[in-house]
Image (cartoon, rainbow, N blue to C red; front, side, top):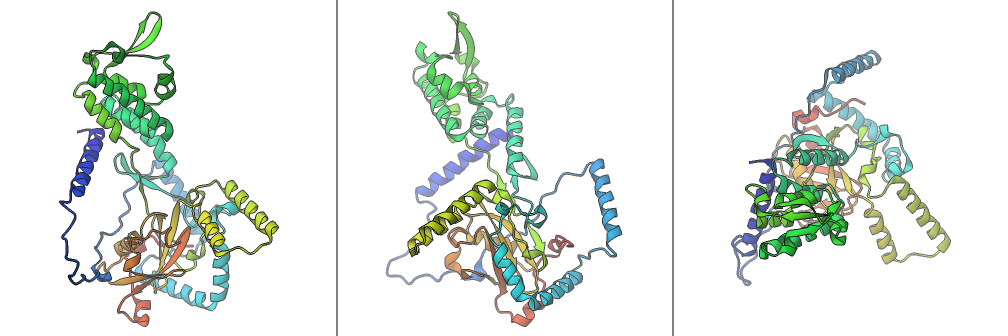
Length: 442
């Protein structure tokens, strides 16, 4: 079965499962109103998740490998020793930096408060970015990790490669993935109307041909990528009648192993090929965790638009010279939060190390717990997370989003191993050893 057919088969199974759930067959056991309430699950009963394993990347070319070796050789000349990523060396380095951090705590807090919101709109140096950008996977196509803009081009290339093998189904996906949403929706609605008319009245001549100069066809179908391919798969072919171009339908021209009802269903169920947000996991030393400047991809607006909006807002407040009510302050805060698409979450461990991951602003607090749990050497360890702004995150917060908890655009969570004394926690290693290899020298 081709990847395209697997995609539609999976969508059909998901729709069937959702319908089954609505019927009540999987709604769970009921209980009487006068019965005693069941105890809420404890934090230790959270589901265990497998460790995050970054997918294998493509092998370097000979030219890239030669360039990398040359760069490493230059670095070796500047440094007297290699950075050691062994467990003992990382712990020792973290302890040294923690001691220095305690001595300069006031200075570090002042620096953090001024840089927390100083994002890419200030035009900062790329070397100070907290991460290189926002990256995604597309399991349907490959295991590569790429920016969204690159994936859009890859998806389009992939779909056009599949067009000859499965023209009808692939063309439905091309409409969704290669056009603006408004145009795609209008086109699909028009195509469905054409095909449903044929299904109900296959013998009526007016439904068997489409004048290509027709206004509706020209505006909503003709120039939308993939639309004409759908009609060709349905059995339409271009002909000239009385010196005018038409699309004429014949049953014999319909794509093999494809009928019109199946094509209509594919048009209704097709959607953009999903991308999975990559966590872009990093393990940081205390000195590295001070950098919180975010790349442009975290914002819904361009840096210039953000800067202009902030300037206009400042001028308006200065001119009004009035006290703002609580409701006005809350509306202002909500407007600021809506500027962001993604959030950078850092978790600080008692031994001084940090883990960092990228999340969508509408992902849940439960997803953050799962991310942390997957990185632990002991995944059965009972732990809690404390937000520096919101306090301890409890069971009642698991279904809330990062947006709801205002943990955007970047947040710091403190890790606490429940039932372990503070002195013991500082000496424990929490992360899997293979994750320690992600620690990089400054």
